[in-house]
Image (cartoon, rainbow, N blue to C red; front, side, top):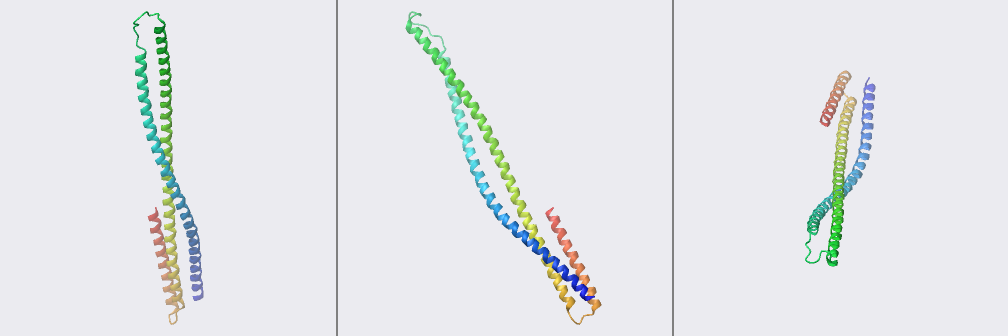
Length: 219
């Protein structure tokens, strides 16, 4: 009878020890992965920060350039309006100098109009570029959030494994103590057996309670 109880306890202890070894190996692997992931996240965080800084600088630069281009368009428009005003000839309207002046003004207006169109197209292009940059910045921020969540998940998993390992170690210690009690002399076998199984059941209930509390905290 006692040998069966001892065998049962030894089996339980062996089972717990195997589980502890499994958890330890998993924790070690997780710890290695954790450190590697942490380094990777740190580097990615630095890269994201640098990219965001560059994007902010680019947005500021584009905003200033757009404002400058719009100012130039306004000036060109005003200058074109002045050039298009009718000119009253001071001499013979058919004089060559007057004709040349009119043609020159017409050419100037055409050039100004062409410059205005180019500047307006450049403004539109830069505004589109700014929208793309803002979109890219939002994508980078989303990636950064996902990396932070992954980092938190790894930390929680490692913490849970550590707690489970601690509970199993406590269970092994308790079972080893019970095994020592079983082997102690000068104790009535029946009384010792009843006490032993009571202790085993109490320890089992305690472990189940601790595990339930741990799972509840995780949830």
